[in-house]
Length: 525
Image (cartoon, one colour):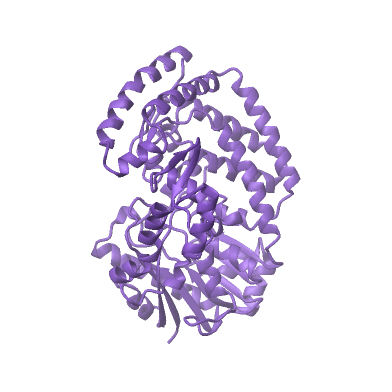
């Protein structure tokens, strides 16, 4: 067998070796981020088979064994869905908007569909059943229920979470959406003609291309960093300081406004002035849209674009430490990067992507009822809440009852669910209900926080039980490191009949260490 392979040959070899589809793009990623070295020959890129084998042997063949050693032999590797590519775990409308803490659709589908296997020895739901998600988040359960011919109702205390969820399962005139988005794009380009930010950014990108090509050649630089041939921190700081002189000169030449005058709100603090001007302009255009469904969908597109244009480093998109208004060395990309000076490219990209994803889901959805209502799951009356806006669904729940729950309650002291979308609350003026969150980050993970969490989740289950059928099935996904769920089950007069322990592989956090969660299957005592 030949030792040197093209990128395409390497993708075919790797697919056979690990028993999973590996695309040429996957191989290019490994080269780009220094996982494997490239071997230039005759002006083309080649990969040494031994380098590739070494990488996949250490990463894929021993991964399950290492995780089980760390997390226990009861780890159900089948529920890792390691065979799924990212495009499958973020399929169609599941990636209409970023959201921390959501489970992958394959996990929902596993428990809601009618298949059985070694671990799931019976099916729990049938076509036409109603599923409840009292911690609806971004609506993953609702979307998958629709695919599986199940009705589903979600509840969330966050108005923006409900907004995302209902948009995902909404129906749209996609021609109208496309035409309206194109019209707004045209208007935004006209708006930019009187501004300098587009010309400035174009010139800045030219300078960055020259500088990065000279001092951070890809992928050689990243490979040398991984081999510890370069002190990344010291070298990155040195070159970042050098480029700042070029950046400052361009800022002065084009008279670019960076900081906003106020820092009162999220939108005031985390966006450059030139970006904020464009955000406000596009939102005013959206306000004037006549079609209500199109208006909501494009408002979500703008929200997604706004999130991507925050003035922060690429490595800190999920944490937000301090606003960044200058160029910087980017550890993620291994070169000098910049903040964004316009929302145009992201607006265009997300508008097009959104239409494509809605269209894909339209081919999979069934003629069932889905809705997410805003409210506190500890006290809300689902039937009464639905009665005015969705009387048909309200009547169905009242007459047929809900077959079960599939949900992931917030984890103790991990995420502030309102704050993660603070930009959207500022932009769209949704009412915040931070004080009603269960287990938020700001309350910590101490004893009192845990007691409050147990009571909160127990109260949710006790309230929701009045709408459930006899012999219901409840599935709660949790990383129960404090052992709280036995008490939650007891407080809710339920029993835990099974635990499915699964590894969580594709985490977005910087900490990629071995991590597991448990799906608790609970029933009435």
